[in-house]
Image (cartoon, rainbow, N blue to C red):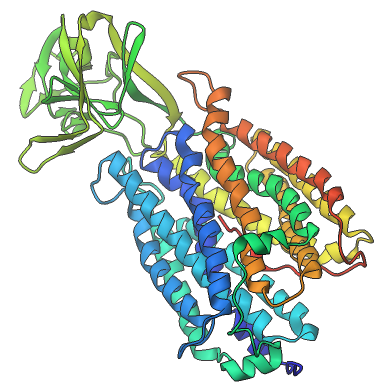
Length: 607
């Protein structure tokens, strides 16, 4: 087998440059997914479930791409065909995902659209990411691999920082950071557009600059003359023959990635509540009839009159000086519309202009559906439920679409007989108001915090090789991260949050560096691509478990009707990663000699 030739710095750079665009996409996804789904109307208790798809796709895609690319040869190359296909889909989906709330969908349809887009985005980026990792193994000799992975690490962190700060930078230059209720702000939408453009440029650059070796040359340098003839071992066989280090490192990985899934899921709302004093709003989750609760965000009287739409009670009319007036649109003081299309409107801060049953102050003139009302000294809006008397039919509808002709289209409807309307009341929960400037400022700030984490990770990665004990540095890094998680849960000063994320960055640096170093020291043979793909399972599986458990844990910690204590989920994450720091000492390395870590995007935000 021939020794691979030394490559110039710029050839090493070209092999990994596409990672810059890939990491921008991952950064935008990890920092904004919870914000997007919260904005379009997702319940906080359901947020973790939306994070199941990304690691599930990574679990499926990474091993498949790893094993298939080990055996792929065609006119486009060995690894590059996967880059072309994955990046093309990623660019398109990046333009669609942040617009989930902009297409006039119902909440349920918008969430479904967002889920499909998220699934496609993560699948495609996973597919685009694999080639860059494998190209270094294919074409770089052992002497230069440290430099090659350092370049890849630099581009990985640089892309992360750029992606994280896009929304806040666009806000600083004057782009609007708020939008109507249910719509994602322009700062986020345009961040995804710009990220998609950069990803496309990076991929085109890579295709122009990277020239993969043809099969006969590859085989000469990698000892793979007979690889094409060999049968690829099955997954079960690979796992059965995996070194013990694979499993012990995987145990540490479980607690680390479990924690980071909670970080990505619950940080935005935690920061919005603690550090930005985001106001709360009340959502209707159903109607109580005595001991029974009919839970639905869309409720009708009979099968035709919508009284609750997407978790908000509709206005039947308005009371003025004791008299009731049916109303679709209500304007006060000449030009201030407080009710439109039976819905209470919000002010510029995203706060409702009126509240059912409360007197509206400073009303000097009143206009109801184009008709002026003279007596307007005591004005309040009235919902449908409070006006119903006696028995009625209550219909729950999973999807309610207001057609162009004014008729309702109802699907999955269930009707209940209610004996006495006087015994009924709205079942509500309290959530942060995602339409307010405070919430969206917090969302942008979280991106900056993640950028601080990435920068802290770079600095700490430089210090890691200076520790005499690899296990000590690994364990200490995770312990510091655990302290950072717990600090994040309770800090109320937005600038002090920098300290928490610098500590979290220490753990992130170790997670990127040591697992790869320890694992590769224990691997031999010609299936490194397959093993690297399978190693990704130690990242994806704990995230899937965390996503499934998150809603249940948060519900068990919540009090009915109150804001979900998402900060406690960050505490749970901190405890998890501290447990991971203890598990480091269970690792038995094949090569106990001190080895400098190679920080690699193998595990970079594989959500």
